[in-house]
Length: 241
Image 1: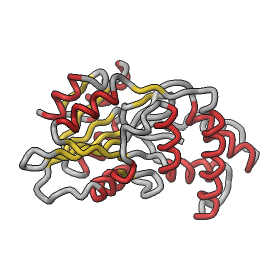
Image 2 (image 1 turned 45 degrees about the horizontal axis):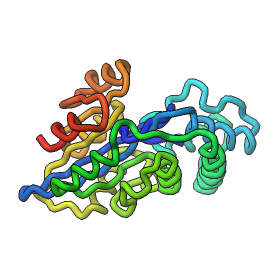
Image 3 (image 1 turned 45 degrees about the vertical axis):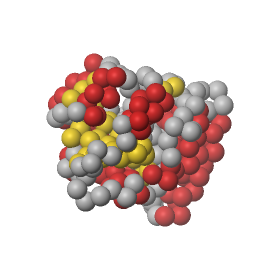
Image 4 (image 1 turned 90 degrees about the vertical axis):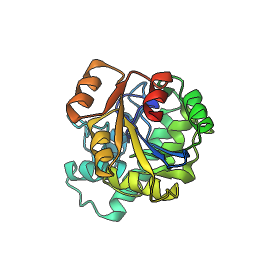
């Protein structure tokens, strides 16, 4: 269904990135990626609702970017007039993943900038890279594979939309799986106001990635500490500052 910061980009999909630095210089990067290309996530979310409950245009006027899959499923079920219990949410998400897999056969995700190179350079500086994404884990796997980034991130060092509905709790889960030391400082990199709020909730410095002027304005209004245009040297400087 969708996500948080901008490692990737596809309409209706965003991604957040969290970065943790220990006093001795080792860094733990927790990322929630954003994706850019077609309307893969929105299409994948609408079709299951239409097929299961007969509701057309289920995601109309609904912002998908920056949310979480569990929260989106709950909202869509509410629009369909269905009780959003665990069984209904699980069924809808299972159907969504089937449709997403089919959509990705013709619509591809693309990294925003040199994601692979940026992650490699961060690791050279002692960064442990992880994910903090609103996608359920299987959805994250599918989107990363579509973008050619399966080997770039280690999902065992991540938090996912299947862990929690609130983005800040997903970031906390990713931090826990990265086994952060208590004296670590945190930098969150994201491309929506939701990422900024999640970063603030965990006491992090926030670096925004703005792929257009609208995103830049949103990040500025939300109070991002710094904003860059893509994943590259400027991002590295801000993360390692």
